Amino acid sequence: PSCGTCEPATRRVLRPMTSFVLLVAALADAGQPPSPPNRPSNQPVHRGAAAFRRQVEQQHPAVLVVGGLGLQAAVRSVARGRPPPLREIIGQREEAALVSEAPPGFASLVGRAVVLALIFSPPMLLSWLAWLWPFFRNRVWYRMLTASLARAGTAFIKWGQWASCRPDVFPTAMCAALASLHSQAPRHGWRHTEREVREALGAPVDQLFEDFERRPIASGSIAQIHRAVWLNQTVAVKVRHPAVVRRIVTDFTLMRAASDLLARLFGVSGLRASVTQFSGTMVAQTRLDIEAEHLRRFGWNFAAWRDVRFPRVLAASEAVLVESFEAGELVSTYTTDLTLGVSSGSGGADPLSREEAHFVVSRGEDLYLKMLLLDNLMHADLHPGNILLRRARRYGRNSLALLDVGMVARLTRREADAFIGFLNAMGAGDGAAAARCVLRFSDSQACTAREEFEADMSDLFRRTCRGYGTGIQFGEVLRGVLALVRDRGVAIDANYMTLVTNVLCLEGMAGTLVPEYNVLDAARPLLDAHRALPRPLFRLAMPLVASLKRVKDRVCR
Image (cartoon, rainbow, N blue to C red):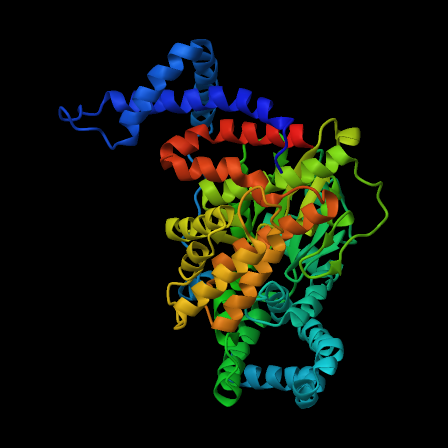
């Protein structure tokens, strides 16, 4: 949000920041050949040189100060060294190389199919009633389906969690019911944990750890977490559930077959695509050594951020991950997932102060924008339950720790540019431009009603999205866009839905913790700078632009 009070402060920060950017442009211009006589230059670096000369005459000291800050940031970046390696993009073709489990045999598939048929028989037998009676479908049938998915095991729980974030494919009421699967997870016994740790680390638990809590402190659909003491430091030991890989491979084989059958018999669209998109990522998530790679890369990307942490990897194998224990309180303790209307708070912690709430929201947005604008590596599950807050009253300063990075979205330049273009179109209030960006959200776009979709988007923007500074309700606009996407049959690839889901979670946190915080308006400095500057200059200038954003957020608070 903008206000009269913050404008002078914004200008004081913006002027030296602009000078530094123009300084870099002028230096780049020094190596360029001059323009022919009597012909104006169209190159941004030439215009930058002239602008820099005017700026330096007015505020030479500011140029030196901010230039020094930029040089310091560059030296700090060089000191980090090369980034940790990442595997190639994981998809269906890489599954066989990732999973050591043999393909399921016919007898295994038949036996598992019988068990699943019994589990899903209640919602299947009543599907005709759900089809005819909307009240029963929304209030009863979706809950029955959710309960069956919870009993069916890891792959179905995880698929249900992922499908709950796809309102472009499935009805909103169904997504709301499936969201409860985020809190249902299995636990395994101590013997399995002990055996896996011994095989992974090469020694019994009592020899490796000074202390090891047998009762897990948390459990997910893939693994559970134990607190332990290793080499005089508290660590978190993540242990994969037994037979989870075999069960996932078997279940996804059956799910693909079932989705094909439903598509042929009933014309159910989107189901096969959603299962296919999710299966590769799901299989990769069972490999805790891949999660360790993600942790190392995120740690490198955010090494300069003193108030953002990722767990440090101490040891990793396919089934066991030992990482630093991150103390703090889950943000889900304080917030509600407004995008689906599901409460995730425990209600037992002290309320956040206004400063703490603003820190969570503004720094969460900074994280998201850096992942999108610079890193092209996005945490694919960035909801409040995966964000820890370390409060200043207990730890000396407010900081965030991000957990559970098994699922990530590795964005191509094309994907990042298409989504950034969509955000810029929202900031400009241009529905037609936003529609064209959304139509780029799939490499195999099947929408045939493109002109109608563009007209619908223009109408939606005239009613709900008139640009920066107009009080845009970001979540309302996005949900309207998703409704049009579903109605017009516009395809959206999985990475784009990860970006949409994360920004909806961010908007939900803002709406709960700091209702007056406008996510789109707050992102404007970074989005404008990204649009105006070449990528190398934006990478160099981003710390300064982010500082401007934080000053503006603080003044407007």
